[in-house]
Length: 382
Ligand code: GLY
Image 1 (tube, rainbow, N blue to C red):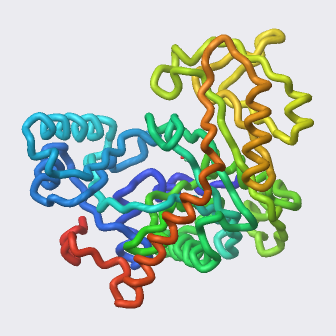
Image 2 (cartoon, rainbow, N blue to C red):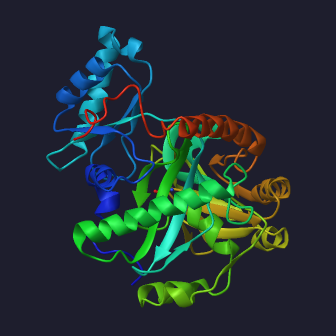
C-alpha cells in the first residue's frame, strides 16, 4: 500500500498537532496560532487581538470552514460581531474533538502544492502544481474540491524559482523527519505541502495532505516520464532510491467541468445528461478524466460533483486554447461550470510573486524571517 497509516496521517487530520509539530521542531514556514475549545473564546480572542487572522476547524472536515477575518474594524459593529460568532459557532460544530477551532495569523501570496514521495528514507520530490479552489473565474465563489490546476514548466511553476522549490522540499523533508521523531514511525507514501509564498517566510505551510492533492495530481502525474506505477511500488517496498523519473518540460493545464449547483447543491447538480465528442477531443490533444459522472445505458449522467477533468500538456497559451476547443465539444441539458482563467493570467501571478519575494528577501537580510510584529514571540502558541 502506498500511503501513511492513521497515526502518521495525523499531519493532515489535526491542524493543532501539525502546527505544534512545526513549532516544536522549528520547521521554517510555520504560522503562529492559537487553539480554542469554544467559539465564544475564539471570538473574544479575535476582538482583543485586532489583527488579520484565519479561523479554521481544528481537524479535517472535508475542506469546509475557513473564515478569514481581515478587517477587524468591520467586526466591531454589533451586527458583524454576531455574524462572526455565528460563523465561528458553525465551524466549531463541524469538529468532534475537544479542541474546536484554530486561529492562525493570516498571510497572503501565491499558493502552490509540493508532493514528496518517501519510503521513510529516500525523498523523491515531484513537480510543483497550483490548485484553483474557487468555483468561479477570478477566484470568487465558494471553495470547491478544485476547479483545475497547472504544473510546470519543468519541476517549477512560472512564479516559483528554483531556490524556493529547494526550500519547499527542505520544509517537507524536515516535516517527515519530525513525524518520525515524534511518533517513532516511518512516514511511507506521499506528503504534500499546500504552500504559499509569503512575505513573512517565503515558502510557508498552509496545510499538509497525507495523500495526492486533487486536482494537482491530474496536472503532475501525466508529466512524469517513466513508469509511475513502478515508482509507487518502490515507495511501498522501501526501495525508492532505485526510482528514476523524468519530467516533461512543457507545462500542463487541468480544467474541471461541473454541473451548475456544484458545490453547494448536490441535488441540483445531479441527474443531468452530458454529451462529448471524445475522439475529436483526443485528436486535439486533450485527455479526459471521468469523475462524478456515470454511464447509464449509452448516456453520461452527472452525479452532483465535478464530472470531468480536461488535461492538456503544452505551453500555457496553446494549452488554454486547446482546452477551450475541447470544452466546446461538451454539451449538457444543464449549465456547466468551467473556469476559462485557469492557466491564463500567468504574468499577474509572476508579478505578485515578485513583490512577495522582494519582501521576504528583505526580511531575511534583516534577520527577521518568520518574525511577526503582531504576535508576541511565544504568546501565539498553544
Ligand atoms: N487540492 C486540494 C485537496 O486535494 O484537498
